[in-house]
Amino acid sequence: MTTTASVHDKKRSSVSEDYARAVSKPRASCCCSPVPKGVVAKLAGYTDAQIAALPTEAVVNSFGCGNPLAFSAVKKGDVVLDLGSGAGIDLLLAAKKVGRTGKVIGVDMTDAMIAKARKNIRAAGLGNVEVRKGIIEDLPVEDGSVDWVISNCVINLSPEKPKVFAEIARVLKPGGRMLVSDIVAERLPPAIAKNRQLYSSCLAGAIAQDAYLDGLRKVGLVDVEVKDRLVYDTVQIAEFIGSELPTAGDGCCGSPVGALARRWAPKLQGKVASVKVAARKPKRIVTRKPAS
Image 1: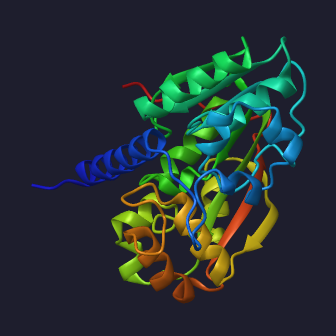
Image 2: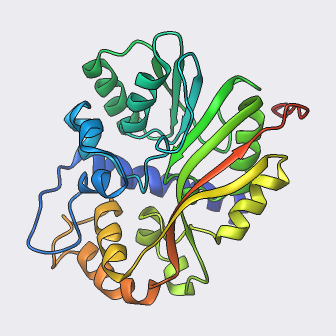
């Protein structure tokens, strides 16, 4: 019998397999949109200076939809937690912000991504970063231990978003903040919402903006707001599908990725947006991880 838990585990497994495949397979540029992976780093708001200062492997294996540190007030000495840290682009940028007196923790469920991130951390010569294996619905992080939670286009991939929101509230220190970049979507057609490839591309699992904000408020976070919002047009949606979709093909015109982009982008016009969502944990709330 198929249970809800097994369905959730299957989705997580599929996403992990897709991203492991993507990070181990170079993708070359081709004659048309969608764009190759890595180009998304510039589309997502990282500056040329930020990109130039990072190991190439961290940039070309970036699958984000924004720069979650762009609007943050992360400072020296802070402890920063990155949910779904991937190849480590945001880990490295955060590490430079917090300095030697601070600490950055990445959590990812995919072994290939963890290995890539650790390689990039070594290449950058940073000693204030660590990567832990785990899922964002059950973080291997102590209660009330981090000043900032960041994430880059990952929470939409979770099949249990209320648990993610609760974990964010749990691990933040009283007064701690979160700032995440993510994808939200309104009224997705059932054919899109059920498409496995579009789930891994950060589209099919996206929820409405209001539901996202309400989910954060329900776990006790305050000052919940959208700091920045970009509604994708047809061309941007096609590029996003092609650059983010870590499944078969190289993103070229004749590939499955290219076909999906051409088919679905017009139907998603005005329904998909990249947002930066901020929130704060009030000092009076104490949350603890439930006993297992």
